[in-house]
Amino acid sequence: MRVCVVGAGHVGLVTAAVFADLGNDVVCLDIDQDKIAALQDGQVPIFEPGLSEMVLRNQGAGRLTLTSSYPEAVPGAEVVFLAVDTPTGSDGRADLTNLRAATAELAQHLSDEALVVVKSTVPVGSGSIVRTILEENCRPERAFEVASCPEFLREGSAVADCLRPDRVVIGCSDPETVAPLVRLYAPLERPLLFMDVNSAELVKYAANSFLAMRISFVNSIADLCEEMDADIGQVIKGISADTRIGGHYLSPGLGYGGSCFPKDTAALASFSAEAGCPFTIIEAVMEVNRQRIPRFIGRLHNVLGDLKGREIAVLGLSFKPDTEDVRESRSLELVQALLAEGARVRAYDPVAVPAARRVVRDVRYCSNAYEAADGADALVIATEWNEFKLLDLERMGDLLRQRIIFDGRNTYSPSEMKDLGFQYVSVGR
Ligand code: UDX
Image (tube, rainbow, N blue to C red; front, side, top):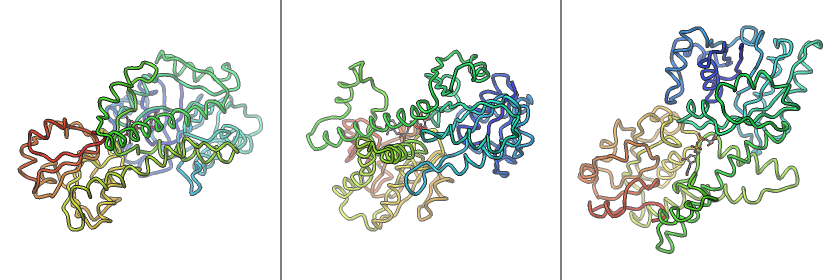
């Protein structure tokens, strides 16, 4: 099938690569010409396990084409995915400027009976906006359909998630109108859930906000554990054994970050208030998340006192492991808070140093964890990359000026750290 994907960001590029890999003829379009030139040159600008190989393989096989040209990408496509970014506007609402512009542009080149599928995360009612823009900009004889198909992939496991989604949510007026989309997803053999477009759009916000709520909930319980001399690990073991609760999204730490949870919770809070139905739970979820870094900094104060002039080594800069993405990274927020307190920061991350350097300059970026620790007053673990789990802690202890570790991700066992002579501060233990 001929498919067009508008937007070569995380969602767009992964979607394009996966559908090309399934044997379709896919054109992926982005107006960022530098990004397209790099991709055409075989450089995949996103660190995402398995993506680079998949993009190159399908480019080589002629099934995946990258372009900045709408006339090249859109005509002939049976399905056109809209996967442009919808950033948070100043009022917390999703900014649809890019989506509107892309829709108006593609309308002029749309083939008859094309199915336009919105993959971007968009507020409820956006499907109608897309339809109106298409009607205003298409030639009158063109017939087209608009559907919603929100994406649930996670960074760091995007290819695997896209190939094996728990469910595919399809918002449409009638399943018959989305037959090409059903054909496209059929080889994945995953459950397809058909519903109206507004409900499909709301599913995305509800799912992400629910997961964010679990994280803020467990972080609040972790705070309580610290005050009451209980162990969050044991509490999680106890609650997650209840099959009604389960164990997903219950890891305590520095809070959630990334390009989705902060944005989607803010958007849900904003559009629900506007609808006269203020979502007070989500306001609390966001507030708990905002307090994570100030609270953690407070724990550094308890041990180190004034941070002015202190050398702090920070391990992990991306918002989570297996990605170079530092958007809304709690780790970078922590680094900035340390700098604001007058601390000197040296930092290391397996892949996110270049991205972090663009955001925060006054940091000594190091090429490994040991270099970061050498001579520092304390070590902070901010992102739980696998390679931090197996650090040579004896060596770390010898390199640090004092054996003090603040662990924002509960990487090590407190008793082992005690045996190694560390003063070890972790979350909820
Ligand atoms: C999320 C959704 O999971 C995905 O379905 C959606 O399509 C996009 O947003 P992503 O942002 O890639 O995916 O990351 P995810 O793995 O969900 O983690 C989000 C944040 O929550 C990270 O900062 C992570 O560190 C944090 N987190 C996650 C916790 O603090 N505790 C947990 O138990 C789980």
